[in-house]
Every structure is written in C-alpha cells, then in structure tokens.
Amino acid sequence: MLIQGFYNVGANSMTADTATVYIRNSNSPYAVVDTAIAFVNSTGQGTYTFSNASNGTPYYIQIVHRNSIETWCKNPQQFTASALTYNFTNANAQAYGDNMIQVDASPVKFAIYGGDVNRDGTVDATDVALIDNDAQGFVSGYVVTDLTGDDFVDGTDFLIADNNAANFVSAITP
Image (cartoon, rainbow, N blue to C red; front, side, top):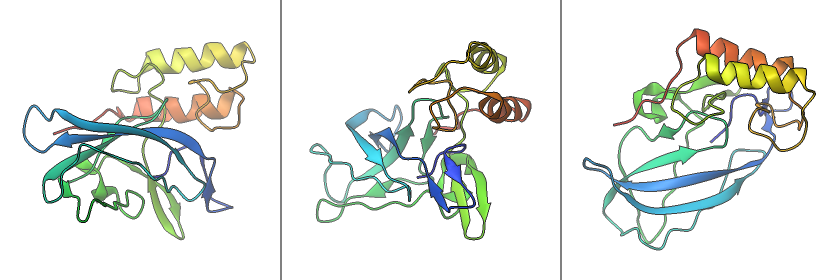
C-alpha cells in the first residue's frame, strides 16, 4: 500500500510509516478477526503477522493509517499455507469502492487517500482546519497533521486535505 502525500513521484518511493491492518469476517457485521501493526517501507511493502486467521476462509483486509482514509480490499481474500499477499498499489479497483487516488503515471501507482486527521471517515473542513492551525503554529515532528511524512506541517499538507475535502473523499466500506 502507498500513502498519498508520502509518495514521491520523482523517486518512485514513499516515506516509510506504520500502518495497522485488520483482518475482518467477510459477512456483516464484518467482525475483526485479527489485527497487526507494522512498518510499511519505501516501496509500500509491509509484513504483518496474524495468528487468528484460518486458511481457506475469506476475509476483508482493512488498512488504517494515522492520517488517511481507512481502506478495505475490493473482495474478501483467503490465506493459503498461512500466507496472504495483497497489492493495493497497482489499481484503484484493488480497494473497495475503487477508493484510492492515482499518485504516479509511470509506473502507474495508487495510494490510500490522506487527510483524515481526526479519523472520522471523511476528509472535511474539520481536518483542514486542524492542519491549517498546525501550519500556522509551525508544528513539527511525528504528528497526524503532517500528511507528507516530512515531519513538518505546512501548506503542502493543507493542500492535500483541502483538495480531498473539495472532492468529498470519505471511507467506502462494505
């Protein structure tokens, strides 16, 4: 998975960060079966370990990142021999509701939307205001309002959230 704002088109790489992955039942109410937190590297790869998932059982994969829209896989996936590989980066159709943004044209790459800093499932004026306040206060460090992963809140972070708010970006879940 790649994270909008963290991805650098010129370098074809991403600022690495942590993300949480939930394995959920494929039937409503989509109960959480297992969860894991791992580091996602510059190519968008992360290795997650789940002890409660069963081989041959379909599960939804849900990605949660500190300031991004939660994103679910398009269709339930199955573990085989206690392993599962899923690539969110090669098409927006890999996400439920095609809910990702293209961040690179060559090679074609898609990322989860950034800007949901208050984690309410939508990028809106509340998120934009939080980012704007931190940008005006020259906030730095590992903070949720830093949408680019450069440890500094500025107009670049504001622009990502403002554009996503204008496009009514929100979580799309089963």
